[in-house]
Amino acid sequence: MAYNTTVGPTLFDAGSGCLLPTLLIAEGRDSTLSETPERTPPSEECSLKCGFVRIFPLWNLRNLRITLGVLTVRWLRFFFAASLPVAGAAIVFFAMRSWEVSRLTAQVEQLQQQREHLVEYVRRLKASRRVAQADVLQQFPDERGRTVSVIRWNEIGLDGTLGEPQTIEAVGRLVYFEAAVIKFDLDRVGEGDPEKGVSLALFRRVFGEDQSASSVSDIDRQARAPSPDRGTANANEQKMWSLFWRLMDEPPLAEQFGVRVAQCEAPAVVLQSGQIWEVTLDAAGGLNLRLVAQRSVSDPAASVAANRR
Image (cartoon, rainbow, N blue to C red):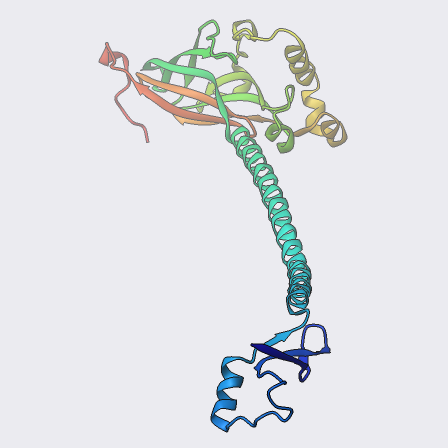
């Protein structure tokens, strides 16, 4: 059986943009039988075209590969170009987030340090310490009917050490405890200045309301509690006391030494037999009296029961 081959109609290739010839392959009859081909009936012609005619686009596989390659490159370029801004934004976001976290962490640490500093600053300003103790041993009336209080007086050092006890008699129910007081600038106290971080007090005398202060002897300075630091701090304190009266009258001098107030203070309380009073000194303030104990009186007749007020 012989086949006739002819060049058929062209096809348009979308990938390459070219018109491609097609090859028609059809099963034919032998030309020797008849010079004029017998016309095939329509039904047989349709069967011939459907069953035996095949269209083979030339270079189709090659162009398909080229087309797929071009599309792949284009999609890769598009994906890469589209992913660059996203990747850049992600990198910037995480970098900014990391920087922000670091900044906030540093800020929190700084605020925590400031808070601790302020807490310590306030603690120093509110601090106080015990500087003396007054124990009312007994009370009795004198020949004029005035109340006489017998007081055991102890000064207290910076480390809590008690000085030598002194026995003092004060005439009158209201008793004054007088001391020279030096108060330093609040900033020096708050910052914990080693030399001027707490107020200083030097007790002068104890007297009652029924006697003049000038008639009372000063408290024995030798009975004071020893200072735990006999070096620079003690020398600085001695220097301040040597300038005490000048500090009261000369503001420039007081400013030079960081002194806020230099004055005499004499807080007073009504005493009763058997009471124990504590004298405290505020770090940034002055003297305070506080009742800390009440012991039983062994000899009730020794105390004065009458209340003159």
